[in-house]
Length: 416
Length: 174
Image (cartoon, rainbow over all chains, first blue to last red; front, top):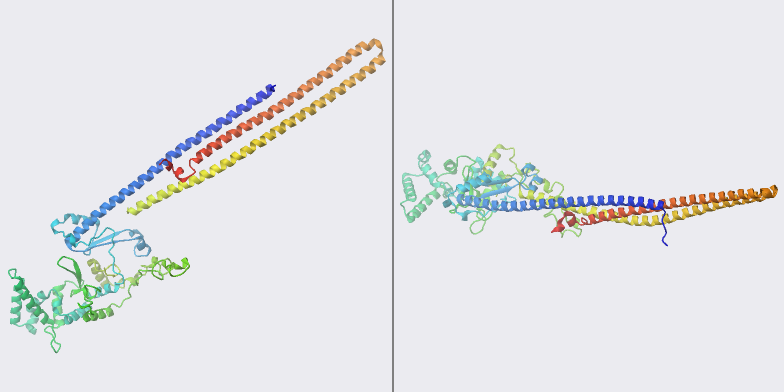
């Protein structure tokens, strides 16, 4: 028989059941809130993901556009190089440049561009390239520069930069000029025709009698043949040979060592023909317009006298040392006896940051001096006094400016 | 702006988003663990509640028996007292008063019986009230625990939707 519950108990159970439904209702409200929050979370997640994807797509688009612009710009550079025969130089300030003290933080990622020593902006290069007559462009002359390729100076060439600067000093140029004049001869100067013309007509010639009337007559005859448009190639070649003999005779020493014209007498004629100021820098280009070398200073002394390697005067054709080159450089070494910027292509204590052959202990293989101490990468360019001996020298700075403008050296006197 | 800055900004955004997702997933896992622990606690609470209810019922019945025995004892004592008085009175007063004394004795015994009946009803009411309260508390607590379980299960269900980085980022739709 089922147990009959009392009225009180049924009443109390009803109250309890009522309370239970309240608990259920509160739980359902809580669950409903949870579900609402979940919907909001889902919406936010989708929004965040969409934003991220949009940002990524924008980046890809920017990279693509940048690449397109860069390729376009490379074309402008190639056109300008092809039309001018001059080499484009590009440098960008990297983060390491800033950390090592070479550049200020504000200059980070700054681009420097120049063509033939003239600083230009991207816009200027583009504008100039667009103004070019397509007929004047010879793309075979372009260097094939790719956007971002930095033009770097040759490591350890600071001494050569100093020598280039020294060739602008009147006294040094005088001595080197004399060595070339007496060692190689008057024909070494490209303005020899003009110089000889001036000498022939000069008061000094009348005074010292370097060239008599017959010699003058012969010179002008050959000169006219050589310069006349109506002359045949054979006639021009014969005239050139005759003129070359005359040029050589100017500086050729006889058995007693005396010359038709001494250096001290001819140097003013050469200087007048070659340069307007002692800071002048000229360019020697081949038939294709490619830059071969520079002429420096009042006597426009060829940079091949101070450069090293192929194409310079360091070695003769049969690869033996050229005595005149050695003599010139021995002398220049004495006048450019400045401290040079130490080659820190590797910083720290040894080459590279990590050398696994150094020790069995991986930690000892790390060159910690790369990161701390005076030889760290962060100190590379800090000691500017050593880098530039002419920093407070007005004369030196003028020379440096001229060499920089010509694109022969970088700001640390290193040669490109 | 150099391209690397935009790339770095995107990298930071991605790292930030993924980092946020990872943290969210960790928080969800912790939430699931806590909710599961609380569910287990509720289960223990339910067992404890059953034991407590049974013990309270047992105690109320013991109280009831004790009170009932006390009332019975008291009524029996009163009835015996009435009987003794009646027998003694009827012996001394003679036969002429015996009918009246018997009537008085009967009325006295009826009253004692009535008192006992009333007391027993009171005791039973008290027992009923006590047990009704006990069962009501049991029901309410079980309902509360059931509702708590519901909430905790819902929490676990929601947290499971975000307990991995991919899910927390909402990338599980791909």
